[in-house]
Length: 246
Image (tube, rainbow, N blue to C red; front, top):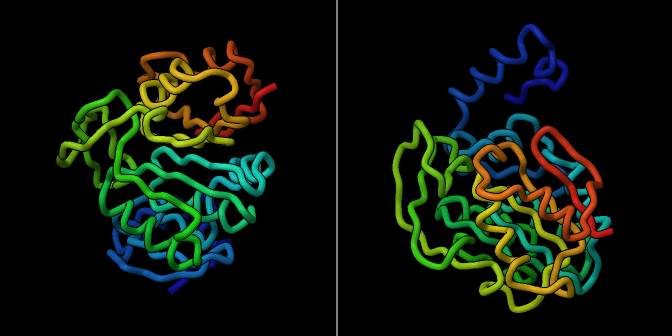
């Protein structure tokens, strides 16, 4: 049964209702059309899946609208920590002629991402990689009950771990990106900034959306370094910073 939006947003019941829904969310697969797009979801496994299933809308519209405004036909969008493909699927559907490269090392999220691309006829416009982005080698991916919270940085409450291949972004791309979105649970500095160290301004993206929720874990101050490289803050939300080259 779908819970009406007005009830979900009523202050006295909002939090307990969401907790109840989380406990009783289906494991999946659940197939829904939300935002005019087809989604294959496992709501109990992952917050992104749960929010699409529970809210019947796509989160982070401000960030996606910003990226769409910076992208056009022939451009390349890079999604680091792509999860089930929310950004990539929505942007490919909105921007004709756009291509994407995505990175998601957690198998079950990447499998749903592939399914979501296929369900919307977008598979031919995206290259989906199992590599994590960072220093060359192998690292431990710490998993969470919320699959999207899994991280290359150890955290309290991790329920398991596995080794994943890690490669620098500059080695993984065959052409410069026009825009990058990165959400890797505190590993943003190690995944993103070496790309700027290894390349010249001609290869830098026009726009960047970077999660700042775990910036206390950054090994480098990504925002300060991006500002020094000529980026300006185009917007900000509770979880993300939106930057564009001046």
